Length: 170
Picture (cartoon, one colour):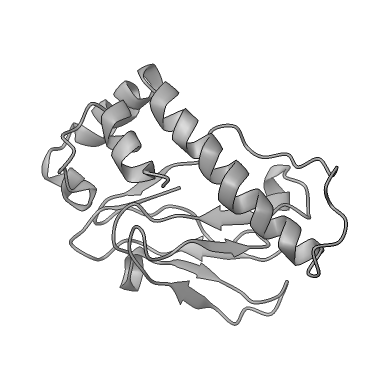
């Protein structure tokens, strides 16, 4: 219903069967992909908006109002265009941090959507509560894993990608 990967590939002008986890095989592909994506983002943006409004916001609302009471007129704010992480083999993304350290609201919630398989050192590591440092990885694949977490206050990070695959995630 929400072809994020397919619309991402279309916006980046990549073939529909392109394997993003092999992006590193062309040294210029990452830069070209981001440049092209920024020029042609409207289709991807439309799918992303539908995903956020139809999946993410109702999920958050159900957590705030578990019995279905209230919340009908609440306003939700979200990042218009998602952060896209593209971490190739041998690259490092970001160390342990909570997003409030970068100016985000402390109560912000992150939704992590892999566009490629994630495992081992290509995983995002999370703690279960602020300051707990009980790191656990998110492992999965596109279409099988969407994870939400309190990224405003809970630390999260990635290590150097020592796998042979590129990780692309939203």
